[in-house]
Length: 351
Image (cartoon, rainbow, N blue to C red; front, side, top):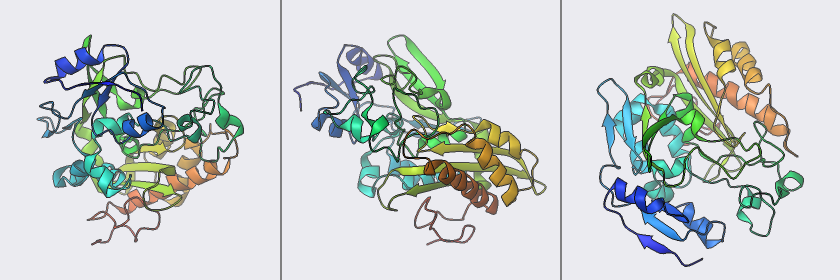
């Protein structure tokens, strides 16, 4: 690990000023950053510690009905907040399906959004990786790539974004609140992460020194609470990133789907919102045929980036499964195996 300076600001303004200097990185829980520093992928010259900043660790009910979650709120605290999980059950389910209990106890909301890819070539400094070292190439293209992207990838990068949390957030139109050297701004989460194109080193819209201070869910997001699920297929049920995942949320009226929300994880360099698939379900009867049709539309532009063609059909099935589970109704309690396809039958009570 390289030597670095350590700064402990007393306010958001001080933090932004310190991080605006070249070579700076923000430190919250460090569950991703410190690992990358240890293997030489991240080499910041200065760490700006956010752990003592006031005002970033609250879950606030907003007057109009939405909720604002501070960037320093811990993943476990958010998932187990009864009011939050009741109104946004798919988000809580996604949080509880990610990492281990120990990591969820320290990992933060803001840090979750900024996770780096788990591509093995990105994490291996001896490998060529345009995301880590622009212009060096992409060894994943001809290497072990069965878990890589099938949507939105380019010849320069085929990595995927690892977050579970972000997938239902994108489906529910979450907004990211940002403070930076030029002041405050807001960005819809669906636009926050960037596809690789020719500049895979740019992973988000954040400019140097900008800091995520909060995440906000709009009032309408809670309208899907009765029919919302997150489904995650992973190589082992415990502590693994998604091979593919899907969030599905439905607003029902008179036995039909009035509105649908669908997003996928594990398929692209960003959480993937399937807007055309959502539109296909408006007014539809919630049955297997409608869900399969929506899944086909959601993956219509998918193509293998290597030896991963199987992920396309797998993603179709996970989308259909998530929609079917959502239509059956949000369980009274989260399953003992959150987001797992092997969890008990939905709709019943789970201890």
